[in-house]
Length: 112
Image 1 (cartoon, rainbow, N blue to C red):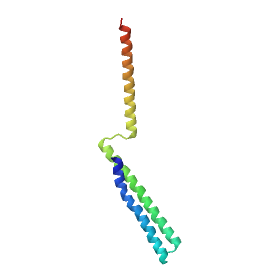
Image 2: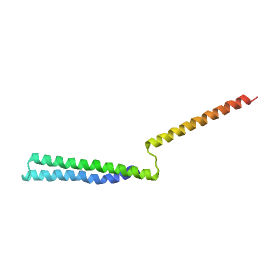
Image 3: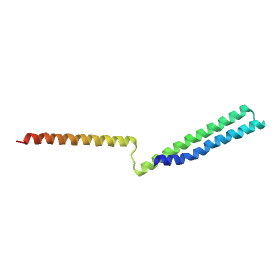
Image 4: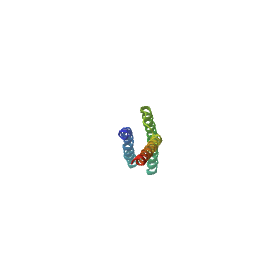
């Protein structure tokens, strides 16, 4: 579910990628018309690409922070907390198993 939510939020970034393609087409057209040189077109496209990538990273960071905030609000443990709880359960299971084993040994000693 969370992955679907993240994909939905990132779909807006897909529009930015399409915009990169449209920018390329527009720049190609400008070069063909002689409005900009090939070098100017390449630089312009690189600037646009860098800006899109920068905004993508910022958006992903904000999305991750918002998802974590929502998980915290719901009380969902993070990875470290989950692993700590998992280790506690394992330790308790080991302790129970050990106590059960010693009870069985005690029962054997008491039998005739």
